[in-house]
Image 1 (tube, rainbow over the protein chains, first blue to last red):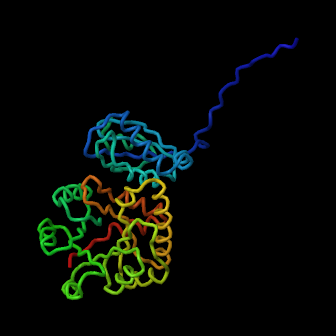
Image 2: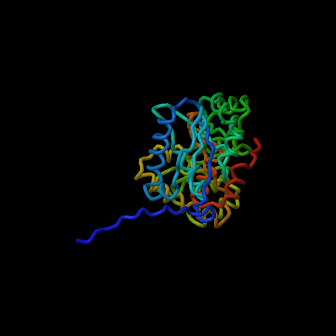
Length: 119
Length: 189
């Protein structure tokens, strides 16, 4: 009987220069106060219906931070225009009418946090 | 600039001021026009082929908008040199290079009324979107101005200029042109 030796492979770290580039967009939610969970679902559902699975996977949006009425959303670089356009279709979150206003786009979260005065 | 229908003007004005944007209000009567002017909004008369010739003559010095779509409505817009040609979100749109050229010569702006597109279900939306991509392609070739407007009565359905610019970009308009057309200042006639 032969025994199989299981060895733990070290996880390789992709160098910074080879990682996929990202863009961060600061949105402000106008008119209604929504919590993070509601915002997440409302945001996701409307974008998915407009872009479809493939389109949304390419944009790869992720909510990085949600505080007060401001949200920082991460997406693939070059896809920020599509993401902003897609937010036009977000009409209601949990039956509350909202307007998502894209305030600023940046390459780092730090810039956006400083601009929005979020700690 | 954004194009909307005249309804709760004060709320519309509040939202548009927040977005720092000029609002063009579509009106049908002189009373509506006066209300729009008192609220420091730019009135624009909504006319159609059924509008009597006498009324059209009265409006010769004023801003006019036509709801296009059919061949006759598009030709009417070209004939009266309308300032705005509102493109409805339907599958029966007639738009070609010749029309785009005439509109470009008349400095008519082609407007996509976004709220109509938003109301549609996803299947209809894909058909409308297909048509609009074609309209934008012709507009781009003949340098006809094209903007995406909120086209709504509800102030909470107004969309920020950045969002509408992005919609125009994903329809196929270059970013610089989309920005230029949306940020263009409109003078009241």
